[in-house]
Length: 438
Image 1 (tube, rainbow, N blue to C red):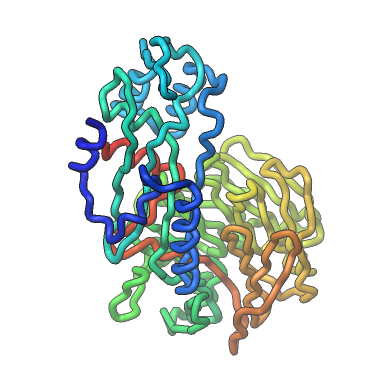
Image 2 (image 1 turned 180 degrees about the horizontal axis):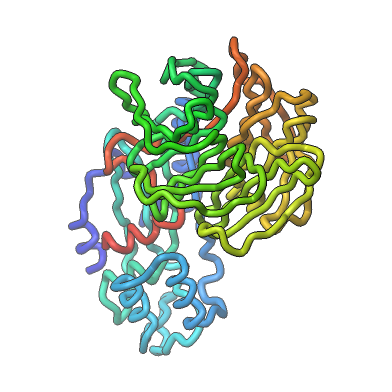
């Protein structure tokens, strides 16, 4: 019955071998299939992400109440939460291994290790999801069975969308294709130094601070007809910007007044968040809801943080006499990363300022600007160069571009796809989207 119902979902895989679990094939065969697909897309310089969920511990000791809380924290709310909750309420089943066990109630643990799998594959301009299942005897409805008996092998294949680095020099903003190293002009006459940029992925705008023109401006990206930009709001010597994707706000620091302001994406509802002497770099942690910034006090240069409304202000690190000109969040390692302008030291710490370590030094004096962290790589504005600092087993650095003018700001941009059905799903939301679909 399960096979019949799942077949109705669709059978239009380009090749049946792309389905992870095959009834009549061995696990060794499946391993070769996985390697074949991986090597194929690697040779074409595509990003391949393979996620394997271990199903060897089919019955563990996770209490259902704790699992309910975790599901809610990770976004499984509303009707989805009720659906998942019902699966663990008065649920009975039995085991089959040639012989059938008696029915028993599940009091602890998570149903894993069944011969069910989900396979994601990106094919041309659409994202296909299908389910392939072995027969399994249970007293639950088939769709609940799919959601509960969960062994997932996921293969996400990025169809070669380019990853780009946006950077600024005096009066111009450019982009570099990190795959081809091709340089293109975006804006060529912005009449100001731009030390910082950030991106609104929802509405597809890059926001930037025009220090010499006293305003925050934006332009559409990647499609920008006429290479034009528009002013969002007036301000006073803005030096750094940060986007809050959750509440649709843009934040910025004013270099001379020491104020941090915010407004809506369209420039309305402008308000002062805090005033802290002289401020410079800015970074926003949208997950934990913290605003990180650096100060440029004559006798006490530091890194601080506050809540997004300016409350709960804390000093994290005293970096005097160095001015921090670049701040970025490393979400992979849960670290705060910064660049010191005078000596070129790239450092990081825990979010509370503890465990400060030196990652790398550019050995460039007073010519180090903004940074942007993506994965294990930190991109640095370093005089006329853009440095790529990669932190793996060993820290390495290389120059990926040298420009005719001094590089002031850098921002890593990842292409999300050109159509809604072609968007890459985040690891956390991916499973919930599968559940909702079923």
